[in-house]
Length: 440
Image (cartoon, rainbow, N blue to C red; front, side):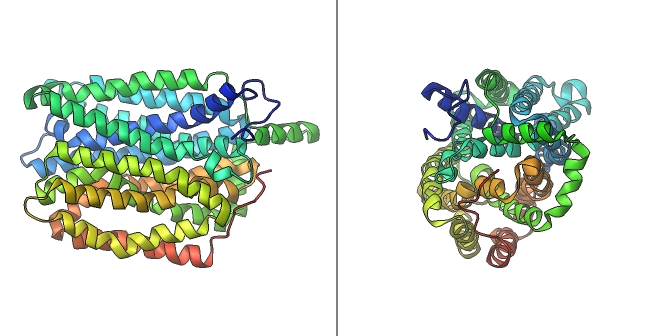
């Protein structure tokens, strides 16, 4: 990856500087998905404390509703932060987003219970989730722009893969933290205070991420854009950046459709242990252990598939991911809906699904970056991605729990299959092959 960073950059010019640039750009994504994952994993534990109801399933759905509400902050964050990143630069905004994510995690960790403050408790949780959603609404696309603009053309997907790799690591860490917390704390301690510890850890990790990002250099591509604006005395306004997206309707639609497949990510990488507990009675600790195997698989496959896509193109992976989930979602989910579900069956389903998810995620960030010019890249990626995620990604666990109550795996599978069919049609007729495009 020696070419990935501009050789003239002060921080990025050394090997240590290159590594700091890559991992500093990706670490915010780690924090973001750690926060969202740990909430998804532990929602079933603290649901009764924060969202009490007469029925345990209703409490769980209410807690996942707060999970989904957090995604409503994403479009707001995307509309506010993306144009600012296109106007002022990627580096400054990356530092801001990671601090906001950590603050949200801290608020969840210290939030009083419903028994202590009544309706204020779920309101605090919702506000914390909205703050994290606002942060995530800027983090994703700014980090994509940052890493891909630092990457060489011929190895762009592989050089930018730390961002998606960090997702797998974050889920792996969140899964391990959730498993250790549930394993070594008694049920009473876990319910009373133990579930708060993973959220405190997320707040501490965000401070470390802020340290990593301090002093990073701006990307060569954006710096070039700034010099061109200065030379022509062109004033860039955030509002004009958003309005200029009207010139890229096809690209915006493609980002939205590719982002639809976040449904599979949240279903397989976050909700699956809870789903296995609901339909097959699998012990939660065993479910987390199986998710660890899935996360390891994801971490191996993402850079591997990204490397291959730099040789054969991006479209085969987008099409392959949609086709695999279209054909195998129902058979895989049906394997979980059996009495006395075993760990080995769950691990198989989790690992296979993680491989399918990595087919899509290995290339989507680079595809997004290659669709837009520098002047609107963060906005072009962030706004349709955030809108789609707020509708389909954030609601995935809640909808999955609801569809399970309606009729088991067939309803949930049909939901996923419709998304995959839309994706296949879009990639076949609209999505261009972007490998090799210049980002200038």
